[in-house]
Length: 103
Image 1 (cartoon, rainbow, N blue to C red):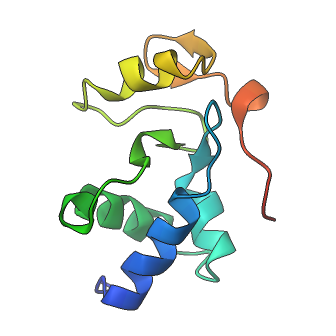
Image 2: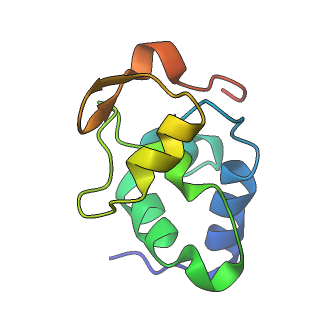
């Protein structure tokens, strides 16, 4: 398993910080942007440990299908407050709200 080092964590958080209000990005999208396209799961793991790195809009990161983080009960209300559209209780409408700012 690949270890989460400080450089990786900062790279992930730097991208998370620029996801605009009302938009979401995927774990895979962030992995690709930082030059680690095969490490989407590691991005998720890093975000799970991001609490010690200050405040970042990690709630704006979802799976490629728009699925929310299971068990993170605050994620949906935070996204709803930003007017992110949902398909159902557990999925944002990724086609309507995915951020495409950096390819």
